[in-house]
Amino acid sequence: MAQGLAGNAADIDYHYDGAWQATPFPLTRPFPEWHLGLGTTYHESGTLWMGDNPQTSVTDSVGRFHHVSNAYVCDQSLFPTVGSVNPVLTGLTLAKQIAESL
Image (tube, rainbow, N blue to C red; front, top):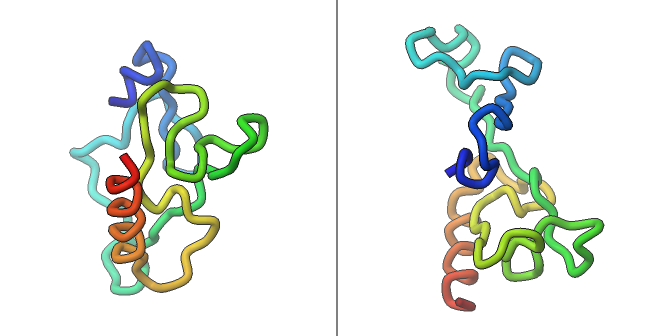
């Protein structure tokens, strides 16, 4: 999917080890020790912005990309912030709302 959007695998960057990398996280490499403890997982959100202005937002108010035709986002990336420990139920509610609007 990412390669389809990027158009070329060489145009995809991955963020881990505190920097952008040209290759995905190696699946054969063990996760760091800090990743194993309870309460140390992260729920990234807010990586995309909803809004009416394509100059200041990535999607419109129903999660449709401004610059990619007929593609939608329906997950926590649209959240401005995470309001709880686990935002999955709120993300599912958002996905349901977007699906119903389609």
